[in-house]
Structure formats: structure tokens, C-alpha cells
Image (cartoon, rainbow, N blue to C red):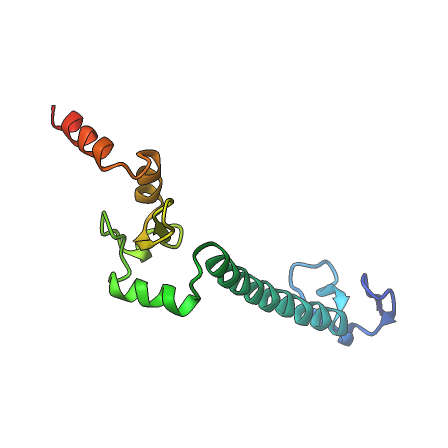
Length: 138
């Protein structure tokens, strides 16, 4: 007999999953409690994944007035690569960012974080970018 550490009921050893590492050869929580915890864990994972998808969808709509299908179409049109450096999505840590004109709000395409931040740092100025190119050539 053993007491479950979750429900505190005293049960037969047959009511516990085997655990070779435990001193008594069984888990500290009973099968019912372990199964309940596993189901809750799976539901939490599913909820988190759904929440992230909904959050991404809401963010696209709020910030750029597009939906995930439009984002996906842009990804396909760009061959899943950054519009500037052509780095493929699979080689990046983050999703490609939606690049847009800050004056008009018009979407230009999808960029990796590095290219997107660089354009932002140059304030979308062609003149400043041309000066940067000349500087690099010198």
C-alpha cells in the first residue's frame, strides 16, 4: 500500500505506474492523478497554441489590416524568404516581419528582423541609404 502525493488516498501498489528510479518501484502519484495531470497538460498546450494563433491573427489585423491568409500568400509570393537579404524563413529564429511604409501604411513585403530594423534605423530614407552605400564603398 502507498499514499498518493496528489489525492492523499492510500492505494494498492497496482494503482501506481512503475518507476524504476523510485525506491519502492512506483511513482509517487497514482495512475488516476497522473492521467488527470497529463490530460490537463495536453489541454493547456492546446489552449496555448490556439491562443498564440489568435493573438497573431489579431495582431496582423490591428497593425496591418491583413489576415493570416494574406500573410501566408505574401510568404508564398516571396518564396518564404526575406524581401531584401533572401534569407529563408526556416533559417530564422522569428517569423518574417510585415514591412510597411510608416507614412502611408502601405505594406511593401516581408522582411527578416535584421533587415526590417535596418530600414527603420534609416527611417525609410533612400537618400540616407544611398549615403550608407557610399560610406561602405569607401
